[in-house]
Amino acid sequence: MMTLVSRLRTAAHLDRLRILGLCAHADLTVCELAEILDLSRKHVVRHVRLLARADFLCCNEQHPWFSYHLKAGGKDSGLVQFLVDLLPHGDGHHKRDLQRLEAIQDARSKGTACLIVK
Picture (cartoon, rainbow, N blue to C red):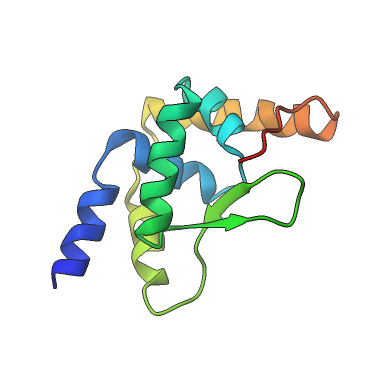
């Protein structure tokens, strides 16, 4: 029971919920998340590490950079999807985050995205 409480506490932060919402749509680097969320990279690294430690995010190390996405599979994968489904998609933060995500994806496709090694 305490593990569930601990994981829910980890997710119960505006910035971490925003990260989960973004990572439900794409694999994103810390640099990309920082740009979308308008936060420092140091701040984003801390949040991403907490989310990964709580098994909400996975790190993709197959590129020359590290990117993060929602953890799929496993016995608790339903929890992270449930949390993402609960996000208020009409919320101003979420709408703005998705617009910025689209701009980042456009920049990535043109080869001008920010890539940073962990």
